[in-house]
Length: 483
Image 1 (cartoon, rainbow, N blue to C red):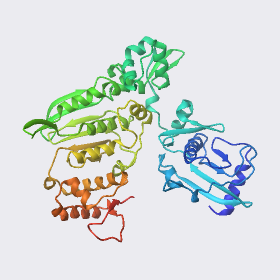
Image 2 (cartoon, rainbow, N blue to C red):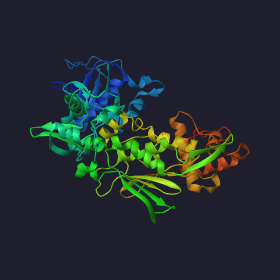
Image 3 (tube, helix red, strand yellow):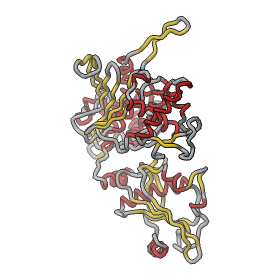
Image 4 (cartoon, rainbow, N blue to C red):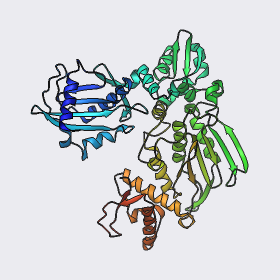
């Protein structure tokens, strides 16, 4: 934007009679976190009020709209070792575009943040979405009607907030939902009366009320139904587990459907899956021990992700776990919102209300850390790299049983190298020939094998040299190609 345009923009903003829900004036900077929260709020409010963008202006007095100047010059500040713009951008989800303009107006320094309106889902900052209420920044989840209106703007109904069953009594709520399990999972004492239970379930968005009585939301039914079959529109989203004989789907050994809601039935589901998986026996110090082929923590995360990231608008299908002799496949309806190559370092969910509550119930990991653990434990267990596949209507994660390096196909070695490189990168480390040898258990004298795998992964345009000028095989460090 040219300087004359910046002055015209500032004049236009300060001529407004007062702050709006898509505009905030500040004199000086307080914290980077506050800036991020305000940008989230302005983006969401701009969407709500049909504005293309929102503005955060430093150097203007709130009450008078007088230009007073600011000492906040983002280009001269850092958060740790990061530039301000990059630090904030990394913590906004989705990655909404914003621009920073620094200029002087009548010899007074002014900084303007211009942030695009939310377009696909409410924008959050460090896992929390914000909204402007008058001139105050508040948490969006505290204003359900505003949140509902924002989602309506996107033409996407919020599945979790829709009603699964209505015209109910308080006793019906207790009969249909496993309220006891909720308090056990959240680690709160069970209330001494029914009113305490009802109030807690209202606060979580699990139930609502109107003049006709009580209603159970899809969120409440999905997570805490004693029997999902009691909710016809939700029953079709039951997790299915199929066990096959051999390496294909020709012969089915077992085929079961879940009965309970995701939260109350999760531990039983994981135990059932674990009981169907192969084990191996090893002898240590003359003792025979049974060892699981697949890490349970990886299974938990993959199954939880399938429940959280499914597209509820896709009909006629539900999350499914398929167990073969040589692999386990976990699929959910819908295509991912981000590139599968970025599953390790990025996060975006269609169903953030569902995801947030499942995290608080400790059913799954914090945002973005679950896939890291899947990759990490696949390496610890010396498994081939997990595969993330996208078909027309499904996203599938595949865990493979152990294979030696020689048994792996070239594409499997490349995928493992790439995932190892990303895992190192998100851990603030760098992949080297040595770290890759450790991942594949390659002896030092066979370092050339690791070098060949690295070269193949570079040729696949998945990794690159951290320092392109360094050409010493022993000293080379590698980073993902997008870094």
